[in-house]
Image 1 (cartoon, rainbow, N blue to C red):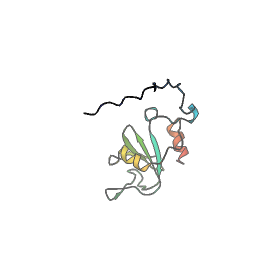
Image 2 (cartoon, rainbow, N blue to C red):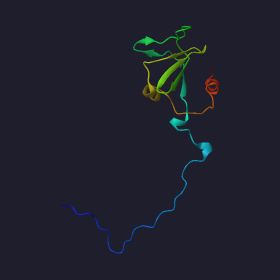
Image 3 (spheres, helix red, strand yellow):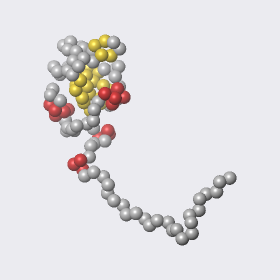
Image 4 (cartoon, one colour):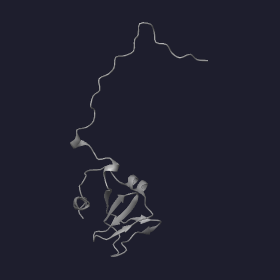
Length: 117
């Protein structure tokens, strides 16, 4: 049966290390997932799910979406401002297809303006 390692004689435990604040300054921190109401990304090309091109249920457009991920739901918003929930997509799909966060916004409308909608 192996025996636990014993430190050589003359060695003593290391001195406590001083605590250092290694967090980023507040203005460089990105909010955590529980601090944001949702995330958005543009989707300029047609969205194809199960071999079918997704169209807006109101105006029929089929591209230039804003895809919104909020509360484990995915919503599509067309250029005209119509919104529809897309139940075939989930947060995992969103995370696989979205890029890194490039900005945060205080309101939904501010984010839409940032995305050109």
